Length: 236
Image: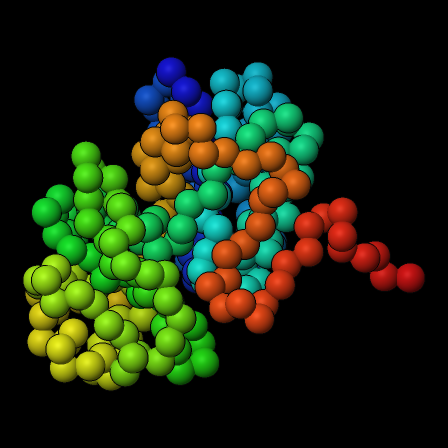
């Protein structure tokens, strides 16, 4: 069996999950603006000695964004450090896909659903992507896009939609062609690291992995840049 360590700090929630030989363990908390204080405590709770390979870990999965700029940087920095020190590959998974996967596990949506996964971008915009499930795994059909809620567009041919994530707070601002198709909204849904694992295992099987220096957030907006650890300056 393959072992995966999974980390998500892209939204208000902070979670770390471990799956080895099919056995799952997870630390999950809702801690807005406290991710840096809680993340390493969670990692220590699951892996007290920090020896990933000794615990059967083969790769580190992470929620790469979009989401909170600070949260994404915290996650990417942690994953880079762990990947460098352990010599393990990393696996990037969209936070929007992760939300859809969490919604499926919690029973908010069914396996035949079309999911409009949305995150509040905090400047009167949302990040969104449209997903369907294949073999129980979220697959992107449209997006990701950053835009005003009034500019969200979803292919009419996809039929009824289930909206999930913090971006659902703007459901009343969606175009009528989208809001009229909403079969359900789950604004309180937060992604959980354990749901990175099935998506990461699929990517690992297809060889879609990153070396430590390739780990980076995905912001969706082009004007935002990220510096790798080697490029980050130190205060003088």
